Image (cartoon, rainbow, N blue to C red; front, side, top):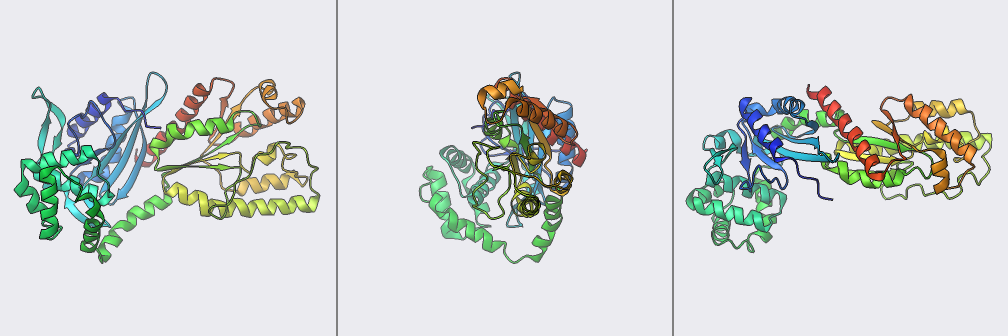
Length: 444
């Protein structure tokens, strides 16, 4: 699913805010349609001295403009990836993605210092001669910056190639001179020839070779690695991902919610991940399967039940550190359909017949998610969908789920009897509100 595009007015106001705060934002790439049409990330070059305060500036901007700062990734020591979210009149979230670069790094080595480039920046002008609120680089600098970015990503589409050719033709000598800082004459001649003609068929296959040359140029710097340590430690101590658990009896709509929710909140993260009940401890292991008759088997004996608790304890602890926590560090949205604590509500399903206090004790020390979402659906409605357990037992489970979730930090009871779209919108707002609150705590 393609993220819903942000309101262009939000981008305009962001440019105005940055300028008012003394942060000159110089847009990189295909900017002709900005800010009326934002096709992807806004790549913005800024003075390195302003980089560290950018999350606070954007946070204040969001608070005063009906938006939320839902993600701020410290990507390199002089760059931030920031995501703003705002809810449209239809209740669905829309996102604005901003890549701020103070210095353009590759493998930890500075390739371009944006402060030098900003000295030649010029205001972007629309077709009627009015300033658009942001700056663009001089043609030769724009060509070099954008071409380096495409080489580093090993990707170039038709629109990007046409843009590079257009800015190259504005100052071919200047662009070639800048290329010679990074590659020898044969490669520079090949790039210049393709950019001038608009035929990138020879250059695109050579991206791997060009990227390897950049890597060799920046290899072997101990200082570069040391300079990245504060960022790495911060990312480890404060993961940028989010972990939710969705609870409810069978038939309450948990799987449908997760399937619909993932693409709606995915733009705020690098990736998404779903687990059913438990995390596997080994990559590629099969998740817990669906159960057609949850109360069909007799409970285990005391010894087997206690042993099962020990197994679950090790499974969830090891699974968290091997699967969940690394995903959160990599800015992943992690969703669980059920979790260990489901057994505290429905111990028959898990054939548990041991001491309930011991099961609660294990649950108290296991890793817990950021958010618990209970889909609260009337038992009669669930009974009409699935009749796997008697109605009185279903009524008991619904009461027990509500009591459990309402007593939890990060617990939310959502009316699951509404239409699917309304439920998904409600949970998406819970997720993004939590992300915004977290950003406020970290940067406010």
